[in-house]
Image 1 (cartoon, rainbow, N blue to C red):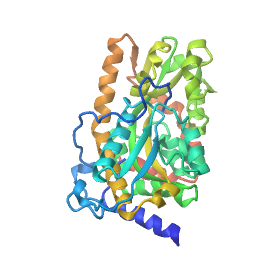
Image 2: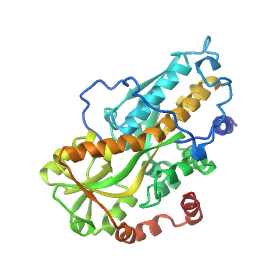
Image 3: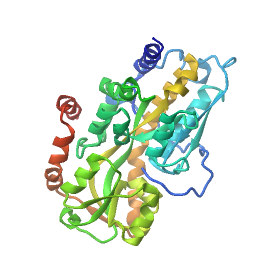
Length: 374
C-alpha cells in the first residue's frame, strides 16, 4: 500500500507539469556546484506551457510553506565535470531546488566522477545506506537495473534530431519509462529527462569514413547495444572503464571511443585522440534518478519542489544543449581537431540494423511508438 501511495504521489507531480527531461577525469576544482551560467527559458514540446506542480500557485519560491520544512541534504552524483552539458543541468537543478525551498533542501553535487562510474553509482544507490541519493544516469546504464525499456533510447539512429527526442521526453510515454525501474522493485525511480548531445566516434589515427573503422579496437562500456554497434561497423569492441580511457588511448590499448562532443573536450580526449567523426549514432539520452529511500524521507511539499526543479532543469537543458554543443565544436576546430563530417549516413544505418533488431525483440510496438514521435 505504501509503495502504491508513493507511486501515486510521483505520478501526480508528473501530471502537473510535462516532464522533460558519460565520462571521468579527476576534478581540478572543488566538486560543489558552481553558480548557474546564463541561460534562457525554454518551452516544452509544441511551444505549450505546462501547469506547475501541486502546491505551486505562483511558480516561484514563495509558493511552498517552508517555515516548518525540515532541512535535508541530498547527495547528487555526476560522472562528468560541471562545465559539461549534464554538469550544467545538475547546477540548474541544485539552484532551483534551493531557491524554491528557501535553502531547506540542499543538493550536494559531487561531479567529475568522484563517487565512481555510472555503474558504481548505481550499485551504491541500490545497495542502500544513503550515501548517494540522486544521480544523472545514461539511459542505457539502467538496462541491468530494472529499466529494460530504457535500452530502446540508446539504439543507433533512433532519434533523427533533438526535437524528436524532446517529443518523446515530454510525452506520456516518457513517464512509463521513468517509472519502470521503481515498479520493478529496483529501489530507484526516474524524475526527469535530459540529453547530453549526439554521440560520435573519435580516434587516435586520422580516418575519413566508416570504412576506416574496420579492425579498430573501440572502447565500449559493457552493454549489448554498444557491443553490437561496434561489431556492426567491423570494429572490435573493447571494454575499458571510463576513468582508464585516457591512458588506454594514450598507450594504444584502444584506437578510439565515442562520447558526446562536450564530454570529449571536457575530458581532454582531443589530446590523445584528435580525430572526431560526426556520425551521431545515438543521442545521449539521460535521466535523473532518486532512491526510494531518499524520496520517502521527503515531505509532500519537498517532493513537489524536487519535481518542479526537475522540470526547470530539463527545460534549461533543452534550451542550452545544442548551443553548447555547437560552441564546443567550433572550439575543437579552432584548436586543430580533425573534424570529419558524415555526408551520407545510410551506410552507418545499414551496418547497425542487426543490433536494432536484436534489442527490440519483445518491444517492437513500443519502439515503433518512439519512432513515430518524430
